[in-house]
Length: 151
Image (cartoon, rainbow, N blue to C red):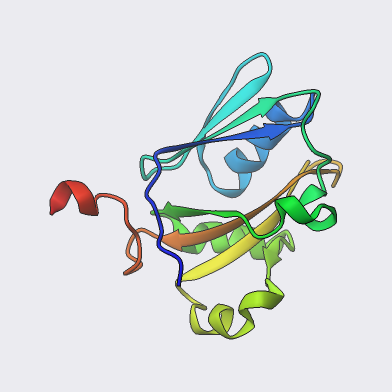
């Protein structure tokens, strides 16, 4: 079993021209606060987490998660207060991902956690980045956020 680490900020490389559209994805699907800069965007969840997408001409292809062995298996866990609304929107858009490695686990966690894989341009459907994300409620028993400060 892997141990989770509550990281407040994670930086992720993306292709040039994609960061603002990635920010729009999170604004629409997660209702996240997004700060778009010239070549990056900062996505803030309502749980003190920040994903920073930085454009880099040397970034892997958007589908590298699936096509390049070295990028398989990594993922981020995000916790949100509005979990039901995010899950509903992701389901409506066909974005919920069922990782074949965790078939039984995904079924066990229905109603408290789901996964996303494809970050897409919501207007064109273009794949911007594959990033496996576990999305859970802050009420989830495994949510590490705030536990260190409250202990």
